Length: 128
Picture 1 (spheres, one colour):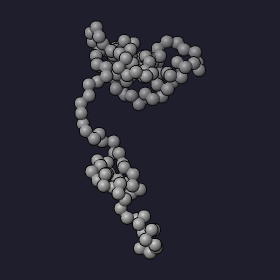
Picture 2 (tube, one colour):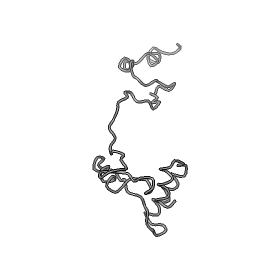
Picture 3 (cartoon, rainbow, N blue to C red):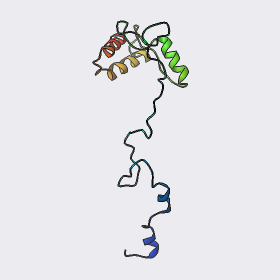
Picture 4 (tube, helix red, strand yellow):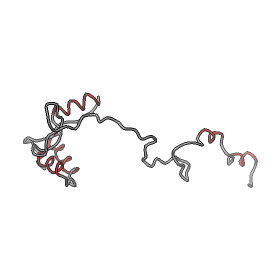
């Protein structure tokens, strides 16, 4: 390489590479690590809230009732996930432009593509 030895030493392998040789993520052309979305280790996690629609301790409504979580289910989820802002559906009459109206509008926009039975029931309950 042309140039001084100081300049040429910049292109030598850096000592940091020895610590990253067995890294599970591949390196891109610019030297960054690419996370392809695959988990490093596959492990089964228990769901945060049991998805039950029957019985005394149910957390979800049936499709006939309009699907979605019950208020009890939302409370259970928030207990297990502190700092969560999960709320129940906006089902009543709301003033145009209010926070609830904006939540409903946002939900309806997000759920437009839901074609399954539970999705359609949830959209009916939210009055989309």
